[in-house]
Image 1 (spheres, rainbow, N blue to C red):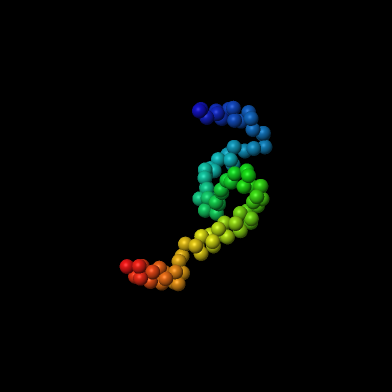
Image 2 (cartoon, rainbow, N blue to C red):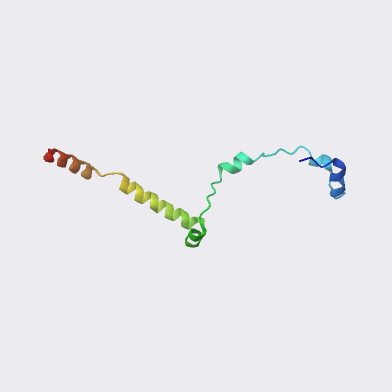
Length: 90
């Protein structure tokens, strides 16, 4: 795609805009900073009805993480009991 000529750009701009002041912008200057603080996740529409705001989504995810952590780590009692069962069966 070709760039618009300066003549065409000057015709489209209002007379109060000074093109000399508009030059020197840096593309993507704040991109890294914006992406560092953003974690955008899209959910399905039927889930959006259940979770109307980010606070409700965060509560549900924290509850899920807590439940997963509790079921993933065996307790000392279950570890001891399983080793004793193996010995007695042999």
